[in-house]
Each structure stands twice: as structure tokens, then as C-alpha cells.
Amino acid sequence: MIKGILFSVTAGVVIAMQSVFSARLSEKVGFFGSNFFIHGTGFLLASFLLLLFGRGELSIESIKGLNPIYATSGFIGVLIIFSIAQGVSALGASRGIVIIVITQIIFALIINVLGLFGETPLHLTPAKITGLFLMLFGVLIYQLSK
Image (tube, rainbow, N blue to C red; front, side, top):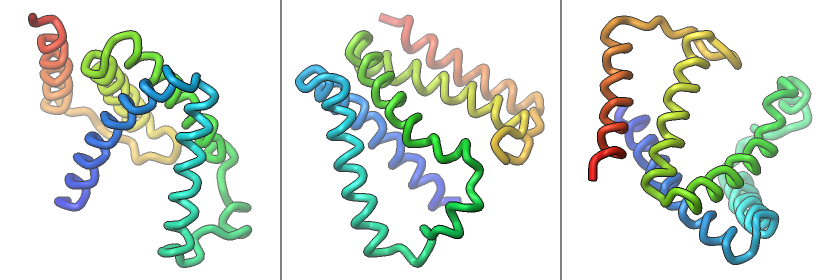
């Protein structure tokens, strides 16, 4: 559990940083240039890490058994970069990322409750619903306060 928390916190930090970086990069080189650079450097790092640490996870056999919808994650990545860059440029880092996080929480909840994409269905309890509303209201109060 500690490992999951640490990786989740790390993800939050790097997503916030990458959001700002991609917005600034898009302002300088445009959307397609920034996407090429972001995904190109990501491809290089992923290739290096696969060669360094991969233990045969990526094979023709593993790709054959892949649900085709999961193969669209690269396309989704392009939409993510575009949306983040546009949102952060228009709203600023704090407001843009807060809206992104709220949307992620709500959509992830929908995915979990309905058991979409192979997720184990989550059963909502009154405590979980209360926690969700407290979190959302906290973010709303943060954004509306001056």
C-alpha cells in the first residue's frame, strides 16, 4: 500500500509539472510540435527502459491477446497533451489542473462503479459518497476563495 501511495504522489507531482511544461512547449512550437517532442522523448525513454528492465513483456503473443481498444492509448495520450496544454494555457496551472483532477475523479468513479474496461466493480457506500462530496466541495471552495 505504501508503494502505491508513493507512486500515486509521484504521478501527481509529475503530471502537474508535465502539464505546465506541455503548455509552455505548445506556446513555443505549436500543438503538433509539442506532441511530437513529448511523445518522441517518451518513446526514447520507454524504449531504453524496456531494453534495460524488460523481461519479455512485449512480444507478438502478448500483443495478439490485447483488447484492440487498449491499443488506442497512444491516441488518447495525444488528446491528453492537447487538452492539458490548452486548459493550462487558458486557465493557469492551478485552476486547469484542479478541473482535470475533479474530472478524473468523477470519471474514474464511473469506470469503477460500472466495472468498465475490466475494472472490478466498486460498491459505493455512504461513507465513500460523503468523502467524494467533501473532496469536490473542498476543491470548489479552494477555487472560489480569493
